[in-house]
Amino acid sequence: MNRTLERILPKVQKPARYTGGEYNAVVKAREQVDTRYALCFPDTYEIGMSNLGCRILYGLMNEREGLWCERCFAPWGDMEEEMRREGISLYGLESGDPIAEFDIIGFSLGYEMSYSNVLNMLDLAGLPLRSEERRELTPLVAAGGTCAYNPEPLAPFVDFFVLGEGEEVTLEYIELYRQAREECWSKEEFLLEAAKIEGIYVPSLYEPVYRADGTLEEIRALPGAPETVKKRIVQDMDRSYFPVKTIIPSTEIVHDRVMLELFRGCIRGCRFCQAGYVYRPVRSRSPRLLAEYGKEACKDSGYQEMTLSSLSSTDYPSLMELCDELLDYCAPRDIGLSLPSLRADTFSMNLMERLRRVRKGGLTFAPEAGTQRLRDAINKNLREEDLMASVRTAFSGGWSGVKLYFMLGLPTETDEDVLGIADLARKVYFAWRECAPNKARGVRITVSTSWFVPKPHTAFQWEPQISLEEYQRRVNLLRDALKRDKSITYNWHDPQTSYLEAVFARGDRRLADVLEWAWRHGAKFDSWSEYFDFQRWMDALAACGLDGDFYAGRTRVRDEVFPWRRIDTGVSPEFLWRERELCQQSETTPDCRTRCSGCGANGLLTGGVCNG
Image 1 (cartoon, helix red, strand yellow):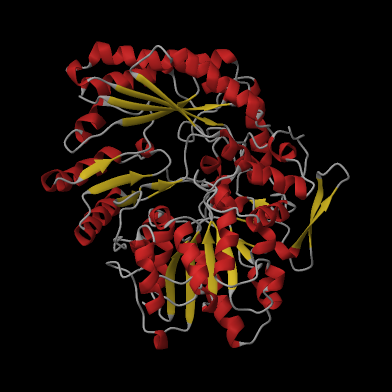
Image 2 (cartoon, rainbow, N blue to C red; image 1 turned 90 degrees about the vertical axis):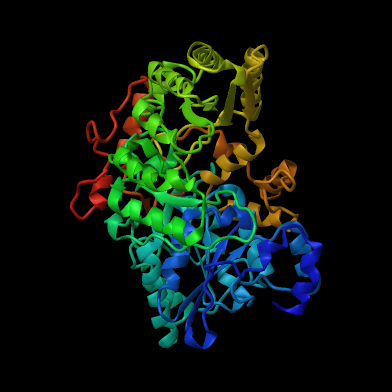
């Protein structure tokens, strides 16, 4: 650590965010390294260190000879101020070297409201923001993650995007970069070759063409560009890398525990859920391997908490078998075992009896909608009687806290559906009154609502987001309906960030100018209330001659050209449109285990059959 850094760290909050040196952090001798990679997370240390994808890529890359991957997070405002005052460039945590000196800078994009931090980190590194201004081969700026499925709002700032799962493609483009450096390729030559790798989208090879009304006429593929870019997946989860040895943070983080990834994909097909579509097809890890990984990770790290992670953990076919083996290890060592993504229709007495062997907190269920009609419209495939059976089981078993998550503004939603949320919460309360063996402890029922954001590559990508004023009216309607229920707490999500999330989720390349304008006028950490300024973003849109409602609040016609037109997730647009039509009729589609719905994602698998 240099002396300037030593001098400024006592002046900032949580200096451990910026020091490195944690247990299991990888430090390599510079003379034994030929390629350096900065793995950047555009949010705080506490958020980024909790990201399993970053843990996987960090461990995977550092196992490669001659390759050194270091971590880099967005510094909080107090640290940024000191860095700029002292002339300290953004640096890798392991070495303290400026990331501008690295070969590749890769950003993980999990949330649209982190985009301003991407620009801020590039500027803190001393690099030009726009790809066209970074003319040399080194450093290359890459980006991946869920938000990369619509890369266009960030396209002018990023050299190439990684679509899908990064374990294999990351090593492939690193090897291509090594070849390019050895053979003295230009940056343009490298990008042309990189575009031939499945899963790599090079935005400079595509040119958007707009109509007079602002909609896209086409995304023109330039010479050398593939017509579509298909996402990458790991074919065999049992052979994929798992970070048994993970970095133990020096300060508390959001998910400070062992995370076991049960499977990727989801069998359910909720029509609003981007992750449920873009992570298809379903691929599971074997319970034997998972138990082995979990035990070894706990031994290595000393963690006293283990989470079984996936989009819907109770859909894992071997869940009971896995829980039994892990609990035999966890219970005598006082290690907690949690299932954060429970479905109300799969929470059973057998599962409850297993979980009660270790520490238990509250339970979380996500009915998403207050009435059966709307749950059918969004294809939640959850019946009220299933939810009530699950909460009765939980309350009978000694649980005294339940969190219920819903969305407001879903397609076809009416006031009756909104008030149905209050009715459902009251039924949960009366289930506690009926079933709880010890009522002296009281009950904690929390209802939380978020504002529906239509996302790319979902059945609702054609749908509008309701207006901000209408969302607030529905919040007030529900709040008033719950006022008299003292045992029920109601929380709702900030609508202004959800509005901007919708703008950027479905935005085109013109939004890059909005993003840069907002950043130059102070935008950063927009997912944090301490920094978020809605008016600044409205001013940015106006300054660039754009209307946020054009992106967030407009219904698309079936054949509209989307900004993500060149991206292929494996799920066909025809299937998504059919699901949208079924929504209008409140008809459900069975889950993938009950019947294959022909979405197309199985075509990504070598054998053509998912193993979920």
